[in-house]
Image 1 (cartoon, rainbow, N blue to C red):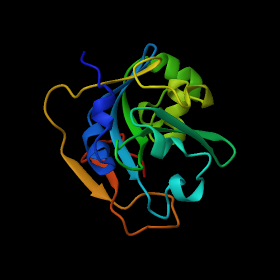
Image 2 (image 1 turned 30 degrees about the horizontal axis):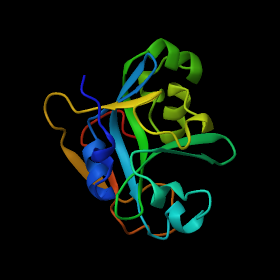
Image 3 (image 1 turned 90 degrees about the vertical axis):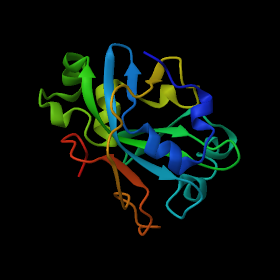
Length: 181
């Protein structure tokens, strides 16, 4: 398994968001193939604009983990991007590949579709919380390069935002049953 390094994330955010679809998230014994992402840069929905102090990672780093807490109950996993700018990619969903028993215990369900479909579920299934925030990729959390055929990646508007809704910066594997709503 070949792991992605920081240089993968040094590129522009939209490219990274698209290219993350089909890679594999690895945390301990749990593995999942990423099937859905969203890109955020300096647009009005971005934490770089709405949470400048909390999200300073988006402009200061690339190839780091940025975790935020939403609705007072869910963690969301992002990777910082763009050596020359501001950006992060939200990981919205993954197809479980290994560690499903651990994921099922954490999530309280054995339905594979409900393990990692949605950013909050994904973090819960993988045991990702604020302890990961600010760390470089490649330690406790790794990303493996795509294996096999390149997925067919579609785009749409991002989900659950009230600003910059017109931007089609959501990337997902067309036809995957693990893509969120």
